[in-house]
Length: 557
Image (cartoon, rainbow, N blue to C red; front, top):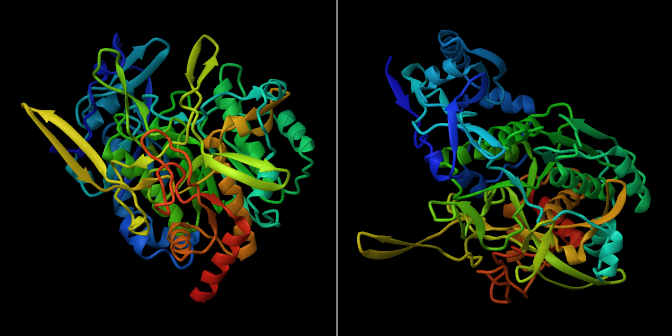
């Protein structure tokens, strides 16, 4: 049978990642997600940026227009049957099929050299040969997720929460989430009738912590908190548990009347497939129908991520834009440089790279600031940057974090960022005795920012104790909570917000507080441009943003 390799689907040799690396033949069951062609071509990112949706589609409308051709589903069923694979999930509306089979059957079906690699306690599947599909699936299947389960996704928290008493002794300035919302002048409504989804990859929160937290900040919720997927605050998942806890406590306290849904993948390997699966579940949720999603989990561009894998996620964010769902994502907590695996003597280097999904032109990338307030008045903000400070975390030490930002290597400069001062992406190479430098454009990250410095952090309750947490992992849910309030006040979903937000700033509307001091390593804030690669356009003035969106709303109608 003639076979066709998927474009750029050969993996980087796993032997170069974590030497010494052990491998063995893979055994047991394997589950993969086959992404199928939509029934009609989705609009491109460029088309959405030029012509944002005038109204959101319903889930039924999306399925009727873009659902997979039944003939294509039939072709996949024949493919699965011929290779002894079981179809565990078939979603015509979202154009994907989940297949399960033995390792031997999966290896034969996709013609990959699938093996299990082990480094320390980390174990994963991967391959080096390209994924191949039969000609019968040409033009039917666009990508396969699940043949590589390396732990490529991470959460952005720069540090674990610290006990409140220690924070006080150290002289740290801390705030409650509702207080920060007040400083940013969020609209006074509470998100009634709205639903916000929180994307998690692993870990969980304790209901007792959430109850104690809400009591401590004087908030009484009138809407439920719903868990979709496991909510397991296990003893070995401290970092993930603190991530989930902070996300949930910030959103629930700022939007007490909004339904909050926690979508948790319950991932064991932090793979791209698990991240894709939980995002897809949230975007396609017909029961809860979230209008806003927030995620603090990401993967670094340049860390062995293939273009096709990002395109698989871009499909999801195009769907979200068409459905009127705003996606907020943390930009990262490591400034302008991130660690990546490389063929170096130590096995790792740092690279100027952006975090995805904040690097998507359809996702609201959220950076971080250091916020200083006097009572109920916001006194000053600057770029969050503690890179010059070492933070001890048990036996090791790490930089105390900074707002990540930069220029995407995989996503084009969107139309709404033209003329905003996004710097060029500069690449240099030394090949065959010749040194070359090239310059290109790319999507600038982040779009906006909010308080994220641990030194001006958020009060939370974790493991039954008052604590302080922060990071761009806090900025993203704070922006999500603002957008939920905006949706209620406007009576409609703001959805893909970027074109309107950038247009309002360009027009000189005071909807954003510009950050003009500080930097994150390679990039600096200043008065020279409306946007910077540290904090984007700046931090919100919620009431002014609501007024600006209302003016645009009247123009539209």
